[in-house]
Amino acid sequence: MKAVAAFLLVLCYLAGSQAWRCSEAPRLSNTIQIDAGLGKVVAVTKYNRAYFLTGGRWYSLGTTGLRHVSVGPAGMWATGTSNRLYKYIAGKFQVASGLSLQQVDAGGDGQVVGIQSGNLLARCLRDSSALAYKGVGSLYWTSLSRTMRYYSCSPNNGCWGVDSSYRVYFTQRITPSSCGTSGWVNVPGHTMTMIEVSTDGSVFGVNRTGQVYQRLGISRSRPQGTAWRLVSMCMSIRHVSYDLGQLWAVTTSGLIMQCTH
Ligand SMILES: *[C@@H]1O[C@H](CO)[C@@H](O)[C@H](O)[C@H]1NC(C)=O
Image (cartoon, rainbow, N blue to C red; front, side):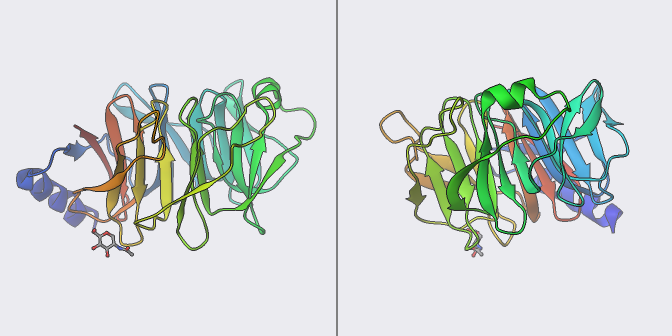
């Protein structure tokens, strides 16, 4: 099965008709999620192990059972198999108690956002708490008064999320020191299972049939952009992340593709 997927990937480059050029990233079998930020790339496998890419190879980040990992200005954070939250401190994932989360994002301007497990409330951890947390005590999370299934923030270009009906939402401004938001805008058009906004404000999402979309027309006057453009991948995708010119896409078969424009 793995071999078949890798073979399809080869056919995929031959097709090469698209604006994005993809090749297989350093192999990490059975990947389910990936996050790239500030030049760093981390991923989680279906065996709930996290890895860090360096020197063209994936290195284990320890044996903590993880489901989702995120790296950004707020450091490295992860959610675990029992929805516990972890922060990477002194070379290992340490429990950050306070709230059970099923997804976390460290891409904001020092604040951390996440989705509370069970009730799916979007939550935010103020920058002062997120940056200073060193593994001691319980964290207090502000409610963003919205339920979401996926949420991602950038330092200067707001946050993007997907609700339980796969509709896309955008918040232009989230204040890192207070977690106050400027309100939510529904982004019409395609529905998505996940969406990521990168440090530079680029936005990519995956729809329920594994197709990747990029948001176009993002500008100061229209921060939510104007349209979606299909990024042809020729394999079904389950997760994407973009950073510094590289688009990382995890296929439903667990391979990672690395694409440049
Ligand atoms: C995902 O996008 C593809 C390509 O545009 C489209 O054919 C498909 O219907 C979409 N799936 C969903 C569930 O919206």
